[in-house]
Amino acid sequence: MYRAIAFAVCVVAVSSASAQDGYERILLPVGPIAVSGAYGSEWRTFALVSNLSDTPLNVRGAAEDCGLPICGPPPPLPPKASFQVARTADCAGRGGFLYVESGRIRDVAVSLRSRDYSRALDTWGTAVPVVGPTGLFERRFGITDIPVADDKRATLRLFDVGNSTPSLVRVRIYGVRVPLRQQDAVPDTLVAERSVTPTPPSAGQAPFCPGFAEVPLTGYSGFDFLRVEIDPERSEREYWGYISVIDNETQHVTVLSPAQP
Image 1 (cartoon, rainbow, N blue to C red):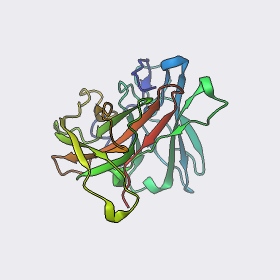
Image 2 (image 1 turned 120 degrees about the vertical axis):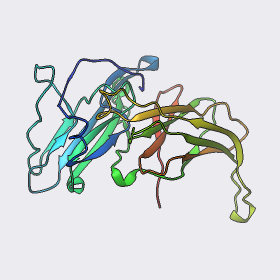
Image 3 (image 1 turned 30 degrees about the vertical axis):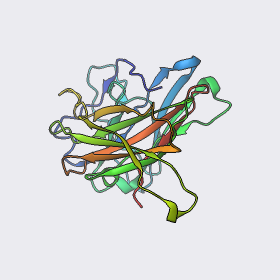
Image 4 (image 1 turned 180 degrees about the horizontal axis):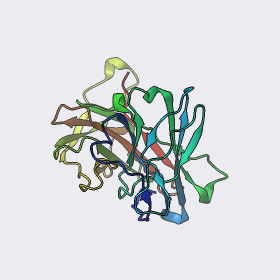
């Protein structure tokens, strides 16, 4: 599902400056793609964008097929209208960005869903969170309830949306044993600590693609589940991550994301 897929698209022209000036960025942690996966799975990922307001709304970042190497900006999205983003820029499996005009991010609703069409009758797919500016982190954040079962594989997928300079992120992995009573709780066991630097996109991809890193979370047995702490070295609000949990038999994907109470 998460392998890179190469395709030729015409991306709406957005320069490095105009991508940020006058627009707010939305992270799509899984780019809208079609890809063949393990065990005959056929994954399709779609983003659906809706304008909730009564006035037109400028949205950028979708790949348009205009028959030219570079496409001009699309017209504004009409009031109360929706469209499906079938493709964004090819970010080599690291997700991608959409841009919404500044001050109007609350006027847009965006959903992102991955579905295995080889089992289309069994499931509507897996919803993946989309992340606006207020959903990013500048300090330590965590994800918990990560399974340790042998029939599942879990991976931390970490994003740096700033891409200003290479950044160091410390990832701490804890083994958790769950007591039945709060008074019996003891500190979780630190089983691994890694220093991770998200790989930045190339210069031409920077307006469309985030920095990205993966950390496998397998091989930790003897616990009820795992949790991770992600601790950015740089205190800038530009980090986010999630855990993908894939069942080895059914290839069903569960997404575990950080939450701010």
